[in-house]
Image (cartoon, rainbow, N blue to C red; front, side):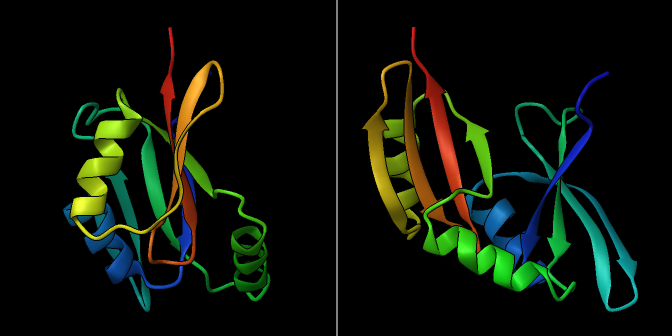
Length: 129
């Protein structure tokens, strides 16, 4: 068994698509219109056949309050691996990304957390050693 798909709820799929591709650098894997919404997945440029991230609409009534509570409590909705958190932080800040937690050494990992502009906090993680 292996991971194939994971998702993040977003308040605007098209805005999320722009952010996750143009700002973060992911590549579109699927963009299939389904009426009011679409089945939109993105993948890492480094692993185009790897796990897909679904940009899922927050249309269910339970989702917006849940997303808001996570953000208010500082809990990331997802976590992405990077080779160098400091370099990624610098690259994203230069693109206008707002970080709510700067690069922080937690012993075995270095993390940082940013606002994805679509209703979520996202953590980036560098494994040490």
